[in-house]
Amino acid sequence: MLNDTQQHERRSAIVRILREDFVRKQEDLVRLLKKEGHEVTQSSVSRDLRDLGVLKASGRYVLPPEEVTRANGDFGMLAQFVRGLKRAGPSLTVLKTTVGAAQSVAVAIDKAEWPEVAGTISGDDTIFIATANSRAQDELLGRLQSIFRVV
Image (cartoon, rainbow, N blue to C red; front, side, top):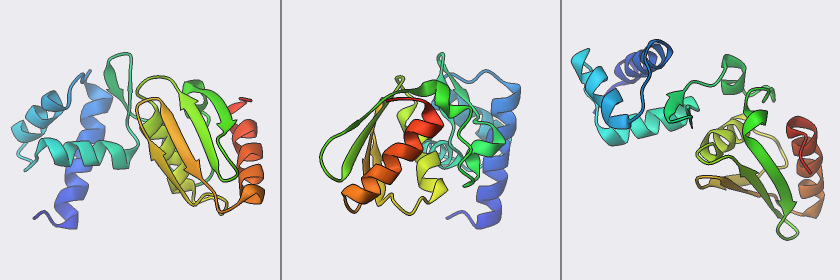
């Protein structure tokens, strides 16, 4: 089991590698990390990429801008990946993204800790966002429309 320091060092290495190299597959990232002496598995890399908010775009892993990883509601870089928004009932909202971007957008929404959001579930290009009631959903829809400029 890795301690917090080892996990932090591994994640720092992932950020550095993704800034410096063109990485297409998780297996490649695992190999590069092992080469540097990190204890790593495919599942730990997958979890790290998710927690770091890494996107897969144009066939490679891309780091989000620093402001996306903070919970300050600044989603500027992610807006380019959002394609649509609609209600799916009184407390479920569907946000459509480009293929491969849903998880990163969902992580950013989760990290923002908006009071109207009960939780998110993401697939490859779709995010389900649950709210407690229709009033919370109205607030969420207004926020998402403002941030992502979608209807």
